Length: 122
Image 1 (cartoon, rainbow, N blue to C red):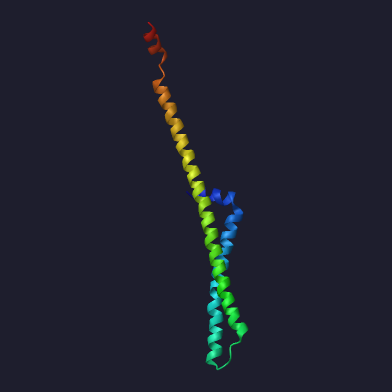
Image 2: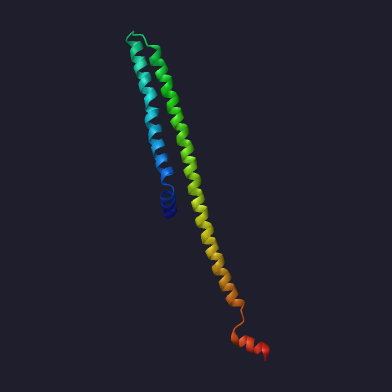
């Protein structure tokens, strides 16, 4: 399993790197809206007005956070599909190897040897 994962990462480095970057960006951007909300609450408790721009920036941070979370989910799904494809391909290859080896053994056991061929002719 580990070798398959390494091979998929090696075969699709851009997909893997973009997935890791999107996970990091998703984590960072998910921390920003609560920090902005903290500033809004601090302004309100200090009896200061909150500007419309500040409120819109808060909503924009929520949208940005959701956008990166969606992109993260998409990239994880795509990389997971590539990993699943790699595992299935490796299993099919092993199955073909086993089947081919089994057929070789079976053909050896059903092929008459020289002594049985001589007896059958004689």
